[in-house]
Image 1 (cartoon, rainbow, N blue to C red):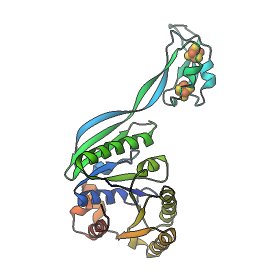
Image 2 (image 1 turned 30 degrees about the vertical axis):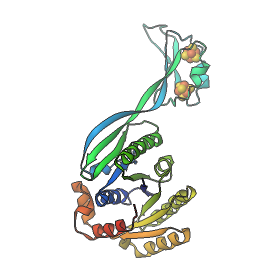
Image 3 (image 1 turned 180 degrees about the vertical axis):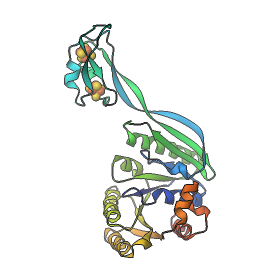
Image 4 (image 1 turned 90 degrees about the vertical axis):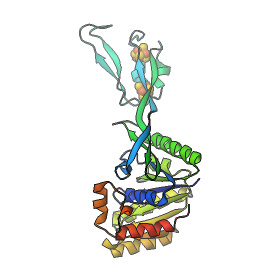
Length: 294
Ligand code: SF4
Ligand code: SF4
């Protein structure tokens, strides 16, 4: 089973357009959207959800006020300032007295307060941080996720999407095609770890070139074979040439150049992979796909 990740140094380079095109051309791969903070592959892959699971990626502390002696130890040990004092006005267990309150959005589930509490009033409870989906598409199964608003743990959610995609790939004897996140953060590291090939999609701008260099250094650090695609290469011939030279210096191959094509935004607006159309960008993607060995 081969795992190929499509990533980019920065957002907006056309990474998802490339992944959707490869998903159509491959015909027999499990596709995974690991850009869990801003997933959009589902917008260009017609799909029907067949399995939906809540992902428990965190724990949060809660206080049993019947056991709490108001000693304030928990506030002192919480390094995330998740425990604040509140005053309960009117009726309650101890009306008009300050009591510790845990802000669940700030709580990291570190358990320091659990160990510090002299009356065992604090316990950790699992918390759902997102949903993981397995969907069917015309080109095969598709693993994707949704991170809850303000939830932490996107790296762990990516690992879960990859686990689901790998399990399906093994079961169906297929390879995995991953749409990753832009950048070089922990979500990207979680996306590329264990992959046999990374393809970086870039665009001919100075910021695109700068971010490409950072991402190539990242994949080099993990010793993952890396190739580059220059999208909309013809909007700036000079910088495209500079990117080719940079790739030569860094020892990675530019396996294709996709021309600017007004058909691409039209296909995205219709929710279709570009390879459903006969146009210059689709033709370039077919040639590039022919160079990728599964
Ligand atoms: S579990 Fe950790 S982060 Fe959460 S309230 Fe307790 S000490 Fe603070
Ligand atoms: S450490 Fe325990 S007993 Fe003390 S204030 Fe916090 S919850 Fe209450």
